Figure 1: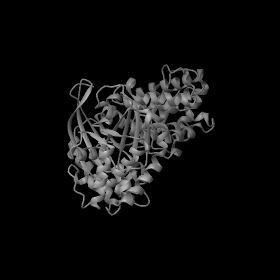
Figure 2 (figure 1 turned 90 degrees about the vertical axis):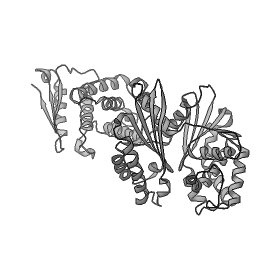
Figure 3 (figure 1 turned 30 degrees about the horizontal axis):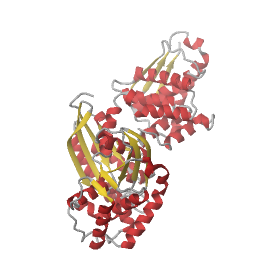
Figure 4 (figure 1 turned 60 degrees about the vertical axis):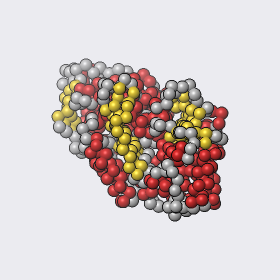
Amino acid sequence: MQNGTRLAAVDLGSNSFRLEIGRYEFGHIQRVEYLKETVRQGNGLDENRNLTQDAMERGWACLARFGERLAGFPRAQVRAVATQTLREARNREEFLSRGSEVLGYPIDVVSGPEEARLIYQGVARLLPQSDERRLVVDIGGRSTEFILGQQFTPHAVASFRVGSVAWSQRYFAHGEFTAQAFLAAEIAAKAVLDEALATFRPDAWEVAYGSSGTAGAVGDVLAAAGGPEGLITRDGLNWLHDRILRAQSADRLRVEGLKEERRAVIGGGISVLRAIFDLLEIDEMQVAQGALRQGALYDLLDREQPETDLRTTTVNGLMHRFGVDLEHAERVARTACALFDQAAPQGSERASRKLDWAARLHEIGCLISHSDAHRHGAYILDNTDAAGFAVPELHRLGVLVQGQRGKVRKLGVDLDDPIFVLQLLCLRLAVALCHARRAPDTAGLTLQCNGQRLFIRTRVGWAAAYPQSAHLLREEAQAWQKTPWELLIDLP
């Protein structure tokens, strides 16, 4: 990463969408511009957990404005991350398809634990270096994340489905504030968050930090009332709670330091924050400057090189957890990537890295069943929490793992993406060529792509020397029949 490089992160939260643009300078990212729009997409989930048309239109309009500002940014320098509302939405693919188009960049839906990891990275990067044991709490619109960590390393992460928007809708639906409503909201929040006590107990951390909307809003109000800057105390929280009760409704609430867009969700946010203070026995919490968007920016730096890409470490961890034959996985990955690099266009290094991961994970399903290992492997990847990966990335790896054998047309996937098709073919070829679980003889074996035609050629005598491998290659050509792609085999 060159000094002066601009990076951008888009955070599609349940309450607000945010755009952060920074400039990389000597290992740090300096803010250049910050845009925020209150979209309240979390309010737009209907009883069937579908985003309403109005909620989608609000989101698309905001993303179109962000997209205009990001015009000209290289794809590798922008990360767009969606959180709980789009994790829940049944029709999220409709929103994401149009949203990615108007933004101009793909939108990653991240799991709760991955959101927590990114939050911690954002918080830690903007804090002074320290060995303190930290608790980071992020109350979002529809989820709350807890993280324990030291320096830049998160040691425990958790995500719970409780947040300022969701709790405001449920317990303060008409904007009315009563003691009974607050009591019910706090009891309900504690019921959801109670399991956090086992990991995030008071003796597990030394300093508590609150990041993002609710913590920032409460910190602003308490500072405007004369309290210490950037500090939320139990007494201050109780004072604000009393002020809200005296106002009786969101419309009548007048508190210095409280922004207009926060008024509608302050009841839910305060009830969740009070529950957390009680549950974890917090006396004071510092307001953190960093948040998810900064974590996404620094994650772009880490993804620049394979050796710093957390996803590589995660893949290695999955291999060990599921008892993968490491030597064979390395063999298949090396073969698949060598073939891919022959036929892929320039600039496909990231796709090659993802193919390498899929190849290394192609046997993780064997721990469950050898005969259906490819299907079990895909299921594992679709349902695991894998640090560094977005949900769509894991799904795509799962599709590659599932597609390592069998008829291609029965996969039921879109074969319009030539890079994906090439990844799939190279994985299938590598699995076939390594069938004897030893390094295949690929000298003189070439793979070329011309439009939707793929060509495999071998040196003279190769088929006679390796008849089983030649048979498997011919079967592979048949597997691509009745697809938009044609695989031609030349085995002299």
